[in-house]
Each structure stands twice: as structure tokens, then as C-alpha cells.
Amino acid sequence: MRLLRLSGLIFSLSLRRELTFRANFLFQVMMTLIGGASIWIALTLIYTRTGSLAGWNQGEAAILLGTFQLVSGFLATFVEPNLSWFGGQIKDGRFDHILLRPVSSLFSASLGSCAPLAITQLLPGLAIICVGLRQLNAAPSFWNWLGWLLLLAVGCGITWASRVLLASLAFWTPAIELDVLYSAVWQFGRYPSDIYHQPLRAILTYVLPIAFVATFPALALTRGPALPILLPGAALGLLAILLTHLVWQRGLRRYTSATS
Image 1: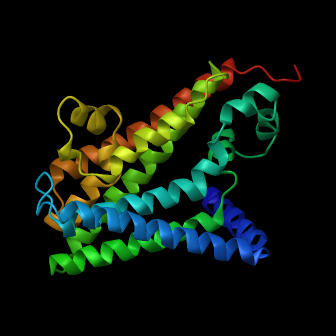
Image 2: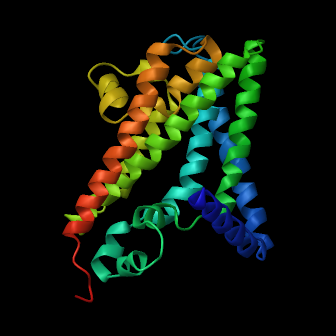
């Protein structure tokens, strides 16, 4: 609860600071709307040439895309502002300041600041989901929504964990920056995992579990939650968080302070 209150305070203070520059806010909203419109147009163009993409109709694919946009908004708002170019903090000693804070270094390094205006990315995500539901002409049941929310939470947890694990490599190889690689792999999540051939599909499900970011939540909302997905998903999310904690602690033991 303490960390949740601290997160809320960080977001509130950051939002107040950003809103003092109203031009930035309006520009961010405009860019978000343009980005949302562009990804919707791209999806529409795909379905002008086919009625189904690996068994996904346009409404289902729209819900997947909207879900992906929601998790992307979470990543851009709360995670990326902290972990972008994390290796630089290790090399020049700025990481020492994180270790001096009276809070978990893992929390402080990965969620200690935010970019509140990036949360506007949630708006096109929600809009695209609504359009997808309208195209399906179906009202998901309570259990569908619950399954979607649970898997969405799993997707956010896996997203945070995978990003922290990648950043943690800086404890061993601070000169290597893999942010661009992560961004490239991340884009695989905006499409149904069914479109990829093996072994790439298995890699995106079990090794780099991008499928849990949007594909499986969208399946739960459109076709109903399935225990063979919910239970492994929850287990995988918890395992990812535990692994992140263990790797982080191992990295801290390896870290040498710039002032030592």
C-alpha cells in the first residue's frame, strides 16, 4: 500500500508539473490522436484485402490492437521514463542516488518517475476496443471482462518485468544499450501471435511472452476466458516478477558505486 500511495503521489506531482506547460499537453494529445488514427487506418487497410487474419476478424483484431495500445500507454507512462538508457546511469554513477533513497531500489529505478502526458495513449486504445466491440455486434459477459482484466494485469506485469530484466543487463555490460532492440521486439505484440510460424510463435509465447500483452487478453474478451490460458498466465506473471527481483538483487551485489 505504501508503494501504491507513493506511485499516486509521483503521478500527481508529475502531472501538475506537466500541465504548467499547456502547449506541451495539447501537442501530446494531438500526437496521440494522430497515432491512434494511423494504427486504425493501417488495420483497416489490411482487412480491405482479407476477411480474416489467422482466424481473427477485424473486430477481434481491433480489440487486440486496442489492448496493445493500453499496455503501451502503461509502458510509456510509468516504465520507459525510468529505464530508458539505464546503462548510462550505471556508467556515470547516477545510480548511486537511487540507492540512497529510502525506498526499494527496484521500485525507485523502474517506477520512481513517470511521464504523465503519455497516459493519453490510453484514449485511442479504449476507442479502438469500443469500435471492435461494435463491429462484433456482441456484448461480452462479466466473465469475459474479468478474464480480460486479469490477463491485462498479467500483460502489464510481464511488460514491466521484461523491461527491468533487459535494463538489469547493464549491471554486467553497461556499455550495451538494448532499448532499440526491445522496441523492435515489442512491436510483435500488436498482431495476433497466430500469424507467426513456429518456432517464432512459441518464442513469443513462452520465452519472450509478448502474446500475453494483447493476444490472450483479446481472446478472453472476444471468445471467453479459458483456464488453460488464465492459470499459466497468472503463474507466468508471478514467475516473471520473482525472476526480476532475483536478477535485480544479483545485479546490485555486482554493482560498484562510482564513489567507492
